[in-house]
Structure formats: structure tokens, C-alpha cells
Image 1 (cartoon, one colour):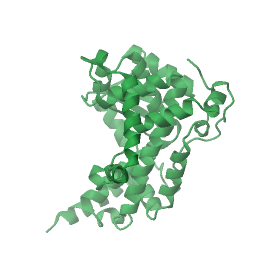
Image 2 (image 1 turned 120 degrees about the vertical axis):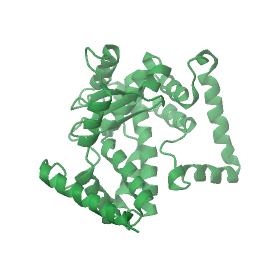
Image 3 (image 1 turned 90 degrees about the horizontal axis):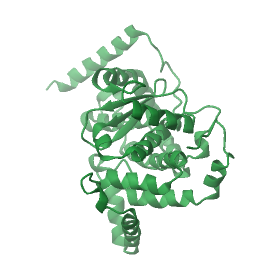
Image 4 (image 1 turned 180 degrees about the vertical axis):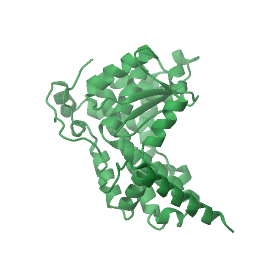
Length: 319
């Protein structure tokens, strides 16, 4: 397996990811959402939850999984080394969170469906999120959307700032961020077919009928999907599928679209140069820069803010 010492996320980050993040940061309300999120719902509670309700992977706990994880961490030169957890959940899914104490979580549903090479691909993809500094933005997106949907314009005093434009911008960025992480998986595996096979399995794979699905047929499906654009009405439908009501918005691009992006990059000189060792080295990584007391560990201050939040929510419940 190739390794990329000192690799910067800028070496492989997709330009659409960069553009979408810049657009997100320019939307009114982003700075306020960032400050409130970091102050009140930072990563520590989620780490505590995982420590209490999932299995932490290590040399003597899921040892094979731990070795795969270590290989991917070394390949992408991810620092500090994240923690890996296995969560009991039948959904074929994985996710990453945290920056000061980054974590990667993979569901048992994914472990049951995927083979070892595919699990490595999933791990590399999630490490791509950590490497690119996506994790805090991802959590902010989920929190901001939930806040906007549940308590409208009153909760925490940010309701008027969490505009529909900000919600749309968060979703658009989340989708584009996936393209960067597909590239991270490709760097680790050096096999775009394996990366796409993993996506295909996640999209609709079955362990029982695994021998009856074909990546070649999935590529043909992707070509047929893109040919639908010849009808202008289908383009409208695609837009609405991605950008419907907030509850129905899609957080990931369709796998058939990701396939095309990844194939193009796998054949590019940019990818070939990275494989030869000619790539940007890191200085500082991370996507979120929030000044203020984001890392304040004063327990009393946190308790006071949570108490104020609870009082506000109680006030909103009163008739």
C-alpha cells in the first residue's frame, strides 16, 4: 500500500469541495451558527457517548479492523491518530467526527455486508473527511438543519440567521465534500474500481446475492443516468431530488455521479503526480476557524450555558 508522508489535503481536495465551502462561509448566519455550535455542542459529548455505547477498536479489540485502520492512517498521514469505534447498527453506514479528538465510526451493518478490501475503502474515505477538516462542518450542518426544523426562528437566538440559503449551502457543501473523500479512498487503494464497487455495494448490495452484481453493469447504469439529461425535464427532476424540502435534501451525490468524477481523476496527471510522490505537503489542516472560547474547558461555564439553553427551550414549550 502506498504511503504519502506529509500529505496535505490540498493535494487531493476536489475543487467543487473548495468552492462549495467558500460559498457556505459567505452565507449570512454562518459565523453565528459556527460560534453557537462550538460553544454549546462541541465534540466532547459525542466522544463520551461513543466511549459508553460502542466498541473502541484497538490491538486486542477487533484486531484485524485495527490493522486496516492503522494502514489507512499511515497512508494518508493523518495526525493526530483518530479513534475507531464499531457501533451496533444494521444501517450500512460510517461517519467521522471531531477535530481535537477525531473519531471514526463504522456500523456493524457495513462490516456484515462488505469484505475486507471494501472495509478498508470505507475507512480511507472517512479518514479523508478528518484529513480535510470536514468533521466540524458536517456536525454543524446537521445541528443547524435540525435546529431550524425544530424550533424555527426562536431557538438560541439564531433562528432568523439560519435561513433557507444557509441550509441549502450546507447541503451543497456536504455533497461536494464527498468527492474529496472518494479521492482519499483512491489514494489508499489505488483502484478506482474497488472504490466504486464499495459504493455500489453500499447503494444496493446483498451478501447473499453478491455474485450476481456487476460493476460493469453499474457503469452502464451511470451512462444511462447521464443520458437522461438530454431531456430538460429530467434535469429539473434531478435538481429537485437533490434540493427538495430540507427533510428530503440529499447529503451525498448519487453513486453514479461520483463514479464519473472518480474515473476522471484516476486518469488525470494530478493523480499520477501524487502517486510519484509529487504532492503538496501540509502546513496546517482543518476547515473550520472559529475564534472565541471554542476550546474553553471551564465546566462551570458550560453548565451555565446549558442551563440557559434549557430555560429557553422550556419557555418555547409554554402555551
